[in-house]
Image (cartoon, rainbow, N blue to C red; front, side, top):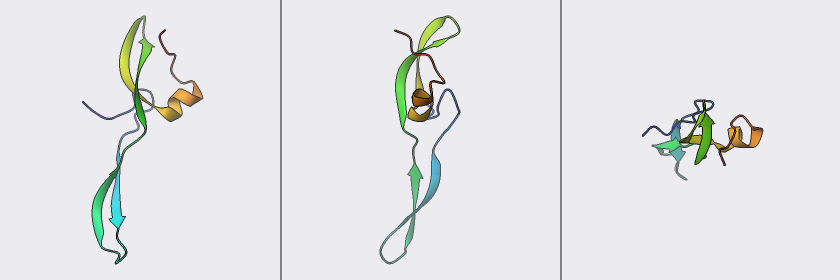
Length: 63
């Protein structure tokens, strides 16, 4: 299961956690994805959509 937005394709970003002594350890910045029912074509489907796309109205929720 890929943690990627169905609408915009936004996925995880990678970087470093920095401790007080500036030691770098790898970390992962996950997008805020929600599993919602949206209309894909004519049929409703449960997909992951980021909250930015939900707020902008880029997807239509199936009721």
